[in-house]
Length: 239
Image (cartoon, rainbow, N blue to C red; front, top):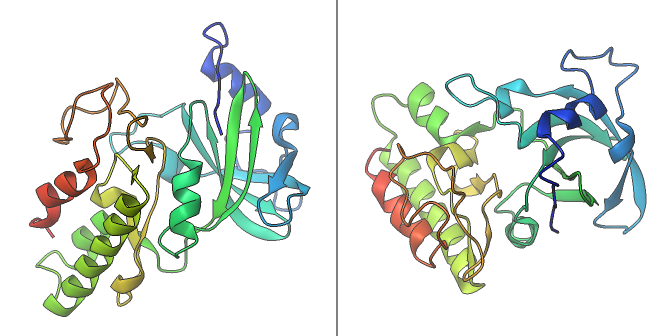
């Protein structure tokens, strides 16, 4: 899937085609015309997608700024509560699909690509105890994660890294904020946020990536096969 956005098409304009930032009543969810139908990845049929509310807790950065290239909504899709991510650039759908098939990423339910405007990716909504690895460390185990739990977690992360490398895939943003788990079920942790993901030799870091996270490689450069593991090794000892 590839999203093409015309330089003359300002990103904030798309917000006029999306639901109001204020949550509408539950009985009358908003449904933007541009994404009213989404292709179900299982049935290959177009089915209605109804946006319920913006998840500002997920698409605001930690400093409170808004990433207009990644708008995240709670929605309903064939009677399921789902997460709908509206993106204005390419998205690593193939990588998400590959990991999801092995229960290493949220399940992918559907996609819709509106040429010249944006794409929407509909996936499993992780709640009911799910949290990022960053929050797990900060809120659950500020004095250190128990060794048994840490062992299960490290084994799972290695499985995810191996699953990517065997298919020649990279994630590119392999940090604690993009790992999710349930306390006590560390062996079932999943990887999220596939904005930079793709195949080795074609996936690239964004030019505007943060300089404060000690990423491998260079802004705008190719994501090398070993970069995810290298980045993981840089924060592993902080768990």
